[in-house]
Amino acid sequence: MIYNQEFETLPREALEALQLSRLRQVVARVYHTVGFYRKAFDEAGVTPEDVNSLDDLRRLPFTCKQNLRDNYPFGLFTVPMSNIVRVHASSGTTGKPTVVGYTKRDIETWAELMARSYAAAGLTSNDIIHNAYGYGLFTGGLGAHYGAEKLGASVIPMSGGSTKKQIMLLQDFGPTAICCTPSYALYLAEAGAEMGVDMKSLRLRVGIFGAEPWGERIRAEIEDKLNIMALDIYGLSEVMGPGVAIECAEGRNGLHVFEDHFIVEIIDPVTGEVLPYGEAGELVFTTITKEAFPLIRYRSKDISRLMPEICRCGRTFVRMERITGRSDDMLIIRGVNVYPSQIESVLMSIEGLEPHYQLIVDREGSLDTLEVQVEVSEDVFSDEVRALQNLEKRITKDIKDILGVTSIVKLVEAKTLERFEGKAQRVIDKREI
Amino acid sequence: MKVEQISIFLENKPGGLTNVTRVLRDTKINIRALSLADTTDFGVLRLIVDDVAKAREVLKAQGMTVGRTTVVGVEVPDRPGGLYEILELLSRENINVEYMYAFVERSGENAVIIFRFDNTDRAIDILLRNGHRVLPGEKVHGL
Image: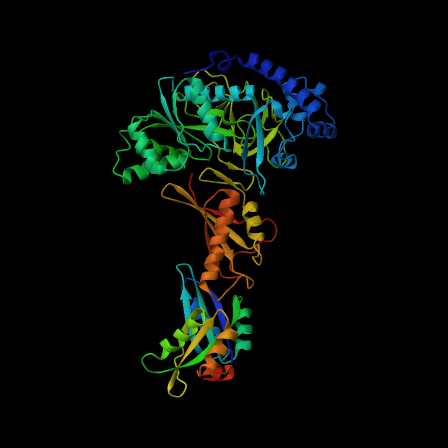
């Protein structure tokens, strides 16, 4: 089903004309309202007037997460705070989060993109959507919520956690669709089975899963255990939130990028060169309709491939292959973005600890686990077990407080973790996606 | 009056203790008393040895994390109630025992217990004032 027939099936030529006119507007707007962009354009020797075709986009400089951090919290907004109706935030590479803002119209755009996503998954106003994405600063919860209301479906604003209650409501309220991370879907399936609930006989028929990379193996497992069709949704808070791209129920082969709102490119993550369709590289997004917080050529760090072939669903939007990796060292643990550098700064804030640590990411059942191995230096060593256990607890708590992720801290003998010359490989990720 | 104890951090995996004892054997250091406190993940090995400085040096040379703590060796009458009298006295004086372990060898008719107190100097003072025997460090290391 197609929610916005007019735009989602625009002939390529008309779509590109629309993209160009929107692009020219947004480029002019950021150049004239945001100091950061003016400076970046000037340094690159381009002006808004140089953008006369979509190909000219590649002349513009990239924006990356560091730029957002440098302008924390609201420095890249193009409208006064009086026009901002909401902010969201995601964790950054250090203590400070990345902040995004929305005008009233941005929220409406976003709701439509999520409504389109639900429709692409075969949902209508007759559906009941169980939304187990976290509500709050994270874009998942409210993004999925507003889209469900826009579609006219009934939404259960469950948020994350309280697994037993979730399972009770899944039985009692009879939702026909569920939104959450794929790993949480598996966890629900397992927890329900343990409680003696037949998770295959729930009324659920569709699941829309995102916020972490997952592959066909996990898809098959979820579909089997919950007896549903599982679809992949993509988004990142900087660009909008969930609803940047969605897999359609008809094709289930790549995610349609809503190109009337975003221009997507694939680049070589090392050289920054734009790659042709079909080649694997880093996804780069330019928002062309956002008011409060437009982004020009934002480097997502997500690795994918673009597929231009027309999909059988009728949408003319290009599809991106499901995310296969990252071009930086960001980890996604139970839906939370974690950079090793954040863990390092937590460790370094504890007196006496040395920067020798290793992160072991694994999956226990369906839930991601993060083990932080830290070497015991002479400064923190104590002959009292309790003092060492308190140290472990403190590190766990600091990581939870600052990163929002639960970890298992394990003290290890000094000088046993690998030492690195050059780029450190501090992460061992044992998960299969 | 004080005894030097060394402690070593050990992960809970095969070979850790063997390694420590091998290093001590190779350097001819004798273990006078020991205790091992453990959790599911790691352990802390506490040792009284005859040559503290050398033991620290050779263990550290192996890359081990070695700590040094002051403990107290107390003679405890080897009869029912012997330990109780000492603990009762200390608790009345609000001294906390962080941990303790027994020495294998005796000092004359008495057993020897190694104590780690939260306030070592005060504990020694109280024990001495109440007629208990606190062993000099040299004596404990050489027992």
